[in-house]
Image 1: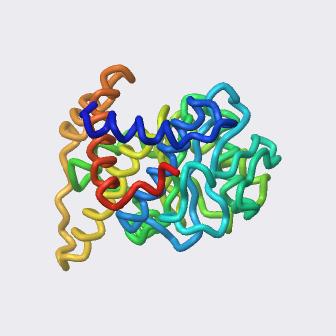
Image 2: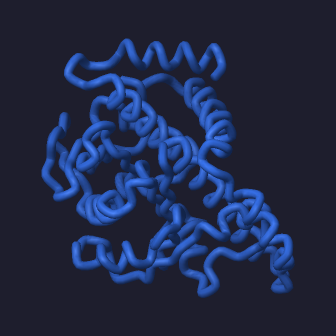
Image 3: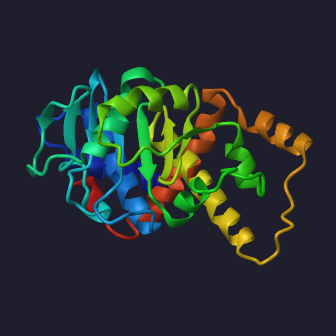
Length: 266
């Protein structure tokens, strides 16, 4: 961790309200940073879509955005805390949450304790790839890095009904990435940093795919199967081997975000 990042963490800690434990405040700041970064990268859909993270020490509780705030308005202190059953524990702005956010995130938090952070987007290119029959194509190095981790879920309408949760869970299986057909993308990870890095790579893979398909040449060059298999082996690292790379990725993102301001830490 750089000196700048240590300084940022110290400032964030000094802003912590007395009633919020230090470990919870840390994940709040990281989740708020993820929202602000998504806004910076234009991964937003106005006040829609949602990111969440489990509350340390309270596995049945998770944090999610207030329904009505733009992503660049989300901060550590205004996140909503709810439980797996949808009961609101803390809602500082009294805005409630998006029901679709509850249905999607509670389903995965209920059955996938390894995915502590879950990030969902409706980006143009992500939604465009989700509408393609073949889904993510092996067109780029970024796509190959995500290829073996992607699951698919068929569109059933706006995700408002809890009855859809069983099918969502079944379709995700043991994967950490989900393409929701005719809808968007979802990435999970053991930390906010890991989930964001996975989403970052998948979003860029979708950008490249749509750009390649827009070139007017229908003879797209797919990566050969031996290369697909090789990249899968190269990117399927143990958690402890992936963590240093994830941390460098996240630290660079935080330096970028800090140049826009520090409102996410409040």
